[in-house]
Image (cartoon, rainbow, N blue to C red):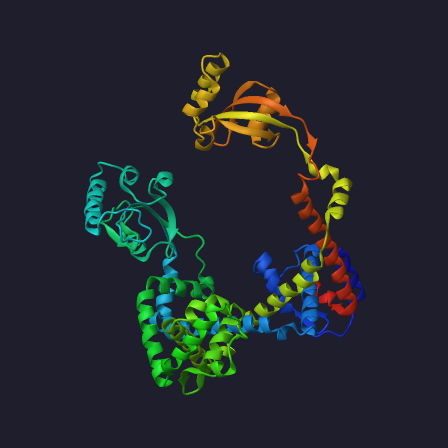
Amino acid sequence: MRFFIFIIVLFVFSSCNWQSDTIAEVGKFKITKDDYKYFLVKRYGEKDSYKDVPKIEKNAMIEQMIIRKLKLNVAYDRGMDKDDKLVADYENRRGQMLANLYFERIIIDKLFSEEDIRKEFEMKKTEVKASHVLISFKTAENSMNDRTQEAALKLAKKVSKLAKEGKNTMSQLALLHSDDLNVRDNGGNLGYFSWGQMAEPFQEAAYKLEVGEISEPVLSPFGYHVIRVFDKRKNLRYNESKFEKEKAKIKRSLYRQHKDSARAVWLQHMDKLKRDAHIVYYGKNVPGLIEANIKRKATNDFTTKSFTEAEKSIELVKWDSGVFTFGDLIDAYGTKVGKYVSTLTDSSKLMKNAEKITSHRLVLEAAEKMGLDKDPKINTELKNFLEYTMIKTLETSELRDKVRFNDDDLRAYYEKNPSEFKVPEKIEIWEIFMKDEDQANILATAIKKGQRDFLQSARAVSEDKFYRKKSGYLGFRSLNGRSTVSKAAFAAGENKITGPVRYKRGWAIIKTGKIQPERLRTFSESKNQLSHKVRSKMLRERQDAWEKDMLDTYKVEINKELIDEM
């Protein structure tokens, strides 16, 4: 339906006087070459030309963009951008983004120079292949070990000495001593990694080691590591041209590595902001509020309308350019005020929240003085956020809220489409899984001759731990329910022993039971599936009808020639 609509639009409105960068006009909105290229790059990567992209794919992409713009026309015409909740969500997102950018400019950019970031980026030129033995202690991150740090260091030194003497391999030492939860799967082998993927002390040590060299114990937040480097090679994913795109990620990585020092600098900066703003806290105004709120708690009367205008006007914090009242605090809680009863009945908690929100406001004021609210990236992201939120809200009201069905609709679909509710033929299967083919053949022969019992053997030797506990019982499976095992079971028939057959990375000996013939699920059994199918069908129909209504309401013109040029 959608593509059919697009083709009609494409041929009806393909000739008019166009601005050089306009792909399409949809109501009051335009789709520019840059808008279109953004989606082309996202899907097909950066290219000089997209003429090799099939026309049907290009048309589908343009159609999706047109549908989005049609919905935006509806949303703005309904004044959704003025909706109180959407405006509040927008302002919250704006505040978060401005505060984050301010923190980046004031703290991160001063702690880490362009040279530091470039050095981090260039370290990614090389990949290192290494293994390690992790010896944790009770105060280390993610530790499940009760040993002291001193005991951990002593054991790590012993492991390092054994590894250097060559008396044990790193894999053996890892299996014996490592507290890395993945050691059973990888034997301590970490494979190849690039700079930035490991904890800072670990990667620094690994990159300094020569190939074949074994480290002394290296302390990271997770414990002591003994590291052996097996290889170093060129990182084929490294691309010098990606530096600008990688900068933000590198900054985040550097911040995580030095977050304690960054936090200390931030707290000092916030103290200065507060001093310069001459901030004053009015804790003396709080006791009366607390007393009134305790009474409200007793009568379970906590809504935004519960508070008097006099209470709302009480000042909690004041500074040179602003004031923060109890009413501002209630507004910040919004419709969720009932969840903050414990805060509103505790002087310390109430003032702490007031201080937190006021500090955020001081940061926003400082950010705006720096002109960060004019940052193009922030404004683009905010515009996208607002439009995305409006569209999602609109789709809920126009699609999900308008789709209604009852049991009669479900039964009508069930009776019209019986093939969708068939249960395929199934066979009962037991399985013994073994990795060694010779051992599997020997055991299968013994079972077939009656020398070994299948169920006892499954409990004793099957290497599938989950089904071993069930004596190898898989239950009833369809022809494709367990790949080669199911196919072999159906080929053998009821009450047979067959195999071993190749399955995944091993071999399966199979015992079969009864066959359940194909059947039709009852209406009652199919109700959940029916609800999903009927809802999906009705949503598609409603979507098509809505899109046709929008196309009838808003004029759509497409610059076909410009699309063909790209």
